[in-house]
Amino acid sequence: MSALHPDPTQLLKDWLDQPEVKAKFQAVSDRAMAAVWEDTQLRVPRTTEEKTDEFTLWLAGHRERYLEFLHQEFEKEFPGIGKHLEDPYDLWRMVVQGVWNMIATELVCYAIRGIAFSWVRDRYVETIYPGVPDFREGIWDVPLLQKTELGSEPIGNFTFDGSGNFLVVEATISPREPRQRLPHLASRRMVA
Image (cartoon, rainbow, N blue to C red):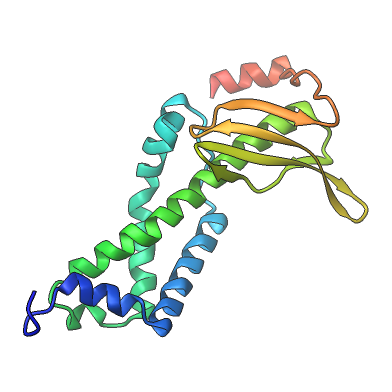
């Protein structure tokens, strides 16, 4: 591009690199992350289809709602910004690429922790619970914690693959056999 017609993508990147813009962009990202954990409609994926291919189908089901939330939050932080751009779609594409990837990671973190909660609930006493998952090289590590009088203490670690399939647990205490459902609850569940 010439000096008279600068590259709009480069202008957008330069604008996004400004400290005050970065701070506002981070504020939108922070609110988006908080929205995931406060979302009362969000449910942990249970079916194989929802978890397949690193939760692709499950994430797609939430994408539109969170993108709408992002758009509203971005407009609050940068009112009327689209009017000043040659192609407002470039800006929105940057937002989607940047913030949606963070939201998707946070959603999968929520899903992994929910799956871990179910596994723990069925095998350990109530004082044991999963911590916040950490994703590295296609594997989710989830600390296994025990409540104490002073807070909590790590007693082990879960490992899940990228699609939420349980791989291994390493703990200082042994899990018990999964709790059996009471027959009257199981039959009621089948009727519903």
